[in-house]
Length: 288
Image (tube, rainbow, N blue to C red; front, side):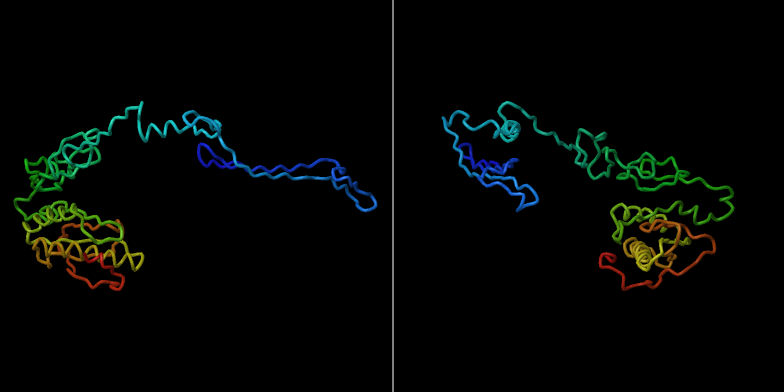
C-alpha cells in the first residue's frame, strides 16, 4: 500500500505473511507425543518506508502508476489550451421562458406559452389567451370575433321562451387548486373574471359551485375551503351578490382539487353559505 504525498514523496507500507509446510525454521520440530496435529512454522514481515523520486523537477520522475489518465482532460476543462469550447447559447428574445433554440413562436410580452413557446389558447378559438376577452368560449359559440368573444346560436324556440340559465351562461369554467392549497392561481382568477362577466349579464340566473371529495374529515374541510374561496372571490373581487350562488361541497365524482361552476337548473335552489364541517382542520394558507 502506498500513499502519494506529492510528486516527490510517497509513503509505502508493506506486509508479507509467509506460511511454509515445514516445522524446522525455528530448529524445533513438533513431536507426535506432544501434539495430535502438525504445527508448521509461519513468519511475518512488515515494513514502512518513505520513497523519494529523484531527478530533475522539470522532467517526470515519479512512476507512471501515479499518473491519472484523466488529468489531461481535467486540465483542459479547467484551463483549455488546445480545446475551444463555444459558449452556450441561451438567448430568449421574447422573454417567455423558452430559449430561441426551442421556441416555435415569438410571443408578445406577458402572453402565457406552452413548453414550445406557443401562446396558450385555452378554448381553441384561435385567439391567444392574452388577447382573448372570453377565455373559455364553448365550441357551439364559435367562431369568435377578434377579441375572442363568441356568439352562441339561439336554440330552437328561443324567440318564444326565455332560455334556460345553462344556455345564457354557457359552459362555466372549472377552477383547479394545487394539492393541499386554497390559493387561487392567476389562471384561475382570469377564468373566474371571465365567468363573472357572464354571471353579471344574466342577473336572474343562479350558479352552483361544486367541490368534491368527502372520504375523510380533511377532504371534507378542504372541499368546503375550495368552494368558499371561489364564492368569496366572486363576491368580493367581482362584485356579484352572494345570493346568486348555491354552495355545494363534499360531492362525489370529481377531482379533490377542482371546483366546478355550472348554471343552476330550473327550480334548483340551495344555501349560499354553509358552516365549515371541521374548522379546526383549516390551515393558514387556506385563507390566503
